[in-house]
Length: 334
Image (cartoon, rainbow, N blue to C red; front, side, top):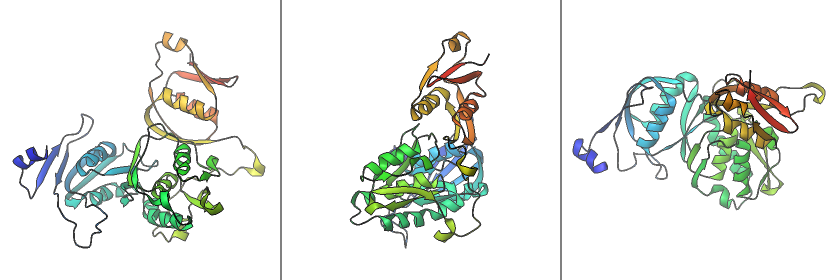
């Protein structure tokens, strides 16, 4: 493919015309590749291609997918970023990361290089990532070994962040002492590129405005809120989600924070059931009524009870739920 491109375009400026799907406007990207690092650039950090773009109402998600293909770069989108937001930006002959950074800035986000990926998330969090990684590394006793080994790291679709973190820490025989502090969430596939366990831990927790606190000679890790002021981050602190305070220990039942967009219903319900050690019973009357269990749903809830979360999931589906003898029963609403 590269040789075909060389025949069509000059070596100095190779231009790619990329057409988006019928749901997106045309995306024009011009890439200029260089063979050696620019002056002052670290040899350990690969230079990203330079782009010329004209995005007019183009959604973030297809833009990221195209950029990952063109630039051979992994993009980690923070859970608080809407991947379907529209971008309106023009640039000419600029580095890929700077182009994306400028494009998302109007939404209060930043795109910054961190570890082996390009992170897209709230400005305050993005600027704090290096300090968070440095703080975590300093708390881990030497030798750090597996903590700092750089490997391809990704999270599968439908995974829970607390399980991702638990599996990550098991590689270094470290336990998470308070998994319940991480709100329940279901993630799409995310790719951290060639990153260390320190960097992946920072990425997972930062999406909840949390950081890792190490204890017991590195054998235990606790998720605690980020104190952005102590990290010396600049600018006005972003408004962050905080747990609801309950007086006198009331309401200690588990609560959920979940944000999903256009995901199939059935796997989400099954994942919720598994996390609460419940069974799911999909009534035969669903098919008889001409309803489907793979309908796509979108919700954004905070501090919801399990019952409230299920009600929100099913609100637009013509289905309803009831909890019965340790099982979740899904049936037609009428």
